[in-house]
Length: 387
Image (cartoon, rainbow, N blue to C red; front, side, top):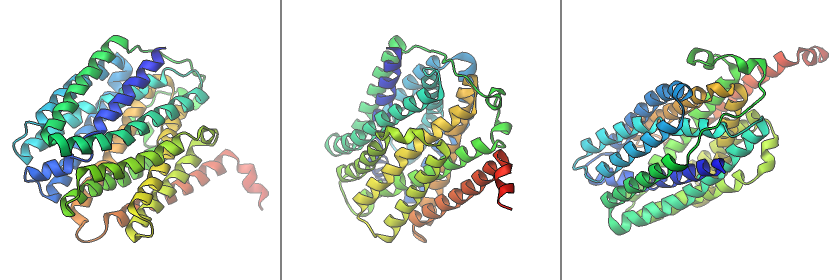
């Protein structure tokens, strides 16, 4: 029963946070922000989120997850309301930066809390897959809602709605959210305490973090470029909301394929990243319509997200999940930071979609090389048999 509440909270968290997706770029533009400045806003906010992620993980392991979740909701709700009162692009930059820091405590704490409701790796995979389905459903609904709200009541009033909804979620969480520590049998490799230095040197975790960087780099290009169509081509925010929903539908389709969880998380990550990179190439080369490419991109994105989360829980003992998910969120933030900044700078020189394709393929190549090395070390006898 308690697990139901964390699923409900994470669903509405994704729903409310995603409402601003179609409206941020046009709202910032209406306040005088240029394309480069919008990229800077996204990058700085993500950098603040990165800083908070590194702090949030260890603290949530030590002091518990529920408190950080509730405080983040209340603080973020206040900041979103202030978004609607911004009078200049600089005001919006400051508010988004502070909000990025506050939200940094939310996702790692929520994922770590959810991981406590599993007693084995199979349950971990199932929980993460269910969470991916809920997040995807929210991602399908939210852009349509956000686009319609932006077109109907205006950008500022939409931020008032977002902030108010976050207050309601915070109140719900304070009453119904409960922490639980799962009993997971871990290997000797997982029993050692995780830290930043060890995390970036362990091959299994390094693969996950590099995958997260590549995924969020690609995702960042889409977040930046698609809403900017409303500025360049005079499209309605409702139109860009529908495009994001196609991506969400694709993610929902792949997240619903529970049999995929039987395969190794690393294999799923490699397959998903390859598909995302190809989707970027299809958008760049216009071989498919944008709606079809977004659907395909969402499908492979839905394969990646639960696979990365499961790979983290497989590599780290339960008492280090907060720290590990904090590092994973930090890797996500680095991808968004890099993507948002470069996209704003290079979009008039080279297609950001093509650069995203290259980033995905480079990381995929490194993943394949690293996995090959790990397989050889795990079974050297197989290598000997070849000679």
